[in-house]
Length: 144
Length: 76
Figure (cartoon, rainbow over the protein chains, first blue to last red):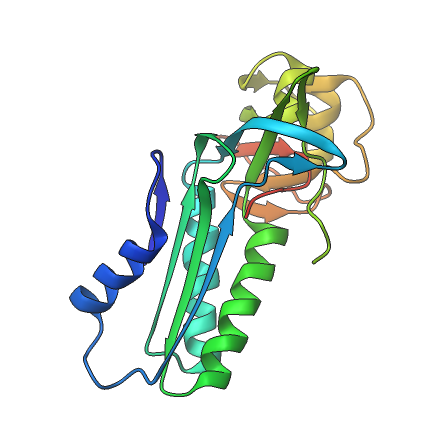
């Protein structure tokens, strides 16, 4: 539950709200840092109509779980949550949710940022964009 | 030696299939697996996983291993 791959559209804000209600001990986390990544309708100067997100079942989940567990341990978090979409997404659809819950803000903010950077560089996901002129693979992520 | 080979994203399209069973002698590393299935030298950016964990091209492979090849990851 702390790491999930979703094949259908999801509402990250509702997911965070439900997770807090169902899994966090009230009064322990003074800080919640949340990152949500959303599909744009443009990339490298072109209009993007849709995108297919592919993953490596089994390896992707394990990579995300290891990343999440390491962040919890390193930053002494109360908890952390990672959710990522696969399948066909459209502009405005949310792709990724990373949330870190901690006693204080620095650990939550640092851990949220770190998990997002680790996810971007190591989690086995690939994007194929649909443009007006055809399809293309996204070859690399933006550096920031 | 039997190796279960998997390809993802643009590499899957280049090879033309998602999985392949390689039954060959003289294979000792992931690099040998790639040469056997593609007939090419590996691209510098290509990533490799053995049994769903990242590995270098020169990591030894064993009978029954799952060896996956894929391009740089672009999630998030």
